[in-house]
Image (cartoon, rainbow, N blue to C red; front, side, top):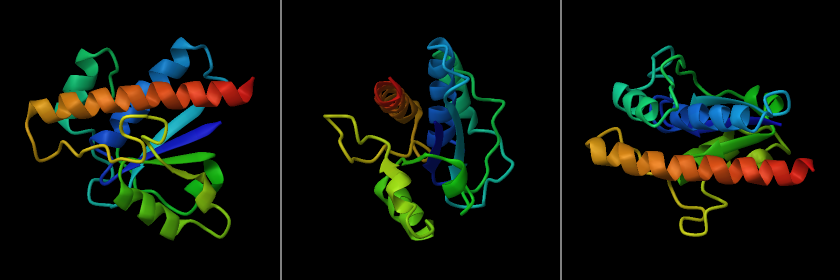
Amino acid sequence: MRVLFVCTGNICRSPTAEGIFRALVAQADLTDQISSDSAGMISYHVGDAPDPRSARYAAEQGFPIDDLRARQVNRADFEAFDLLLAMDRGHYDGLCDLAPAGAAGRVHMFLAHDATHRDGDVPDPYYGGPEGFAATYALIERGCRQWLAWIQQRQT
């Protein structure tokens, strides 16, 4: 199973999700069965490290992400990944528009399995203060755990 996390610039939400998810996959001893990556809808941050505030908060929680670099999502990702998880409705719509014929079914809202935020957006903390990064992180960690459980259920 190959999972791609997608946000706007690939410097806050999606690299945080990638870092948390890869650590959870490793903790579950599933790295030979599940892989992940992250990408952004825009090219502005391509090659950049995650936002220092995201990287700092993730590292403080035990999920370092400073090794990641931003990239832009592309049509080839629909061949390379089984799941493309959008952090908000705009990303979801953009991915569906970009998807080749028959591939839009691989696109899902990141919070699709969260009963309290089902199909809701993960807020972008970029323009806010530290409390926004903490709140966004909590949603992302919960969502990653839910997606991993969902994948594990389908693999048994």
